[in-house]
Length: 207
Image (cartoon, rainbow, N blue to C red):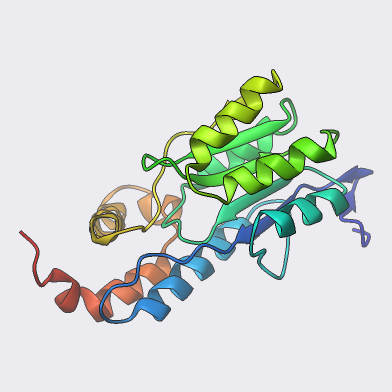
């Protein structure tokens, strides 16, 4: 494979992690954020993509990266826990057919944004700013509707934006160990280690 990431004459998709700090518990907040980020990078690294070594900090940095990209790019936010492998694979497959992929969260944010080559730079910049801002899902939806641009909507997922999200992630991590193939589907080894270390503290105050 050459330096442009071409294999068999075709450019490989790119992937990048976007900074967005997770909710901080009373103890181990920095370690939790690092666990989520490293689990996510492991998942993306298992895909046939060129994974950017550095994260991007905001919409402007993401738009700049897209402007230099030689292939479709999938951006995933760092506060996402245990993103299903099928979601990431589906995003890459969809970018072969449609110009935009959107991964929505129930709280109105995004967990992922995929953009193919060939879109107007001004629209790309607006999409990146919207995806990284408040009310991202509504803002991105409005931009796509105004541009009459087709997109793929991935299954909803969640980010760790509060204690309830962390408890949900903990239950998913435990269930994945009990289900056939669940440990491979829910890539969250570092999150599991963090939960083992901090479960007693996190359990305090549960109803």
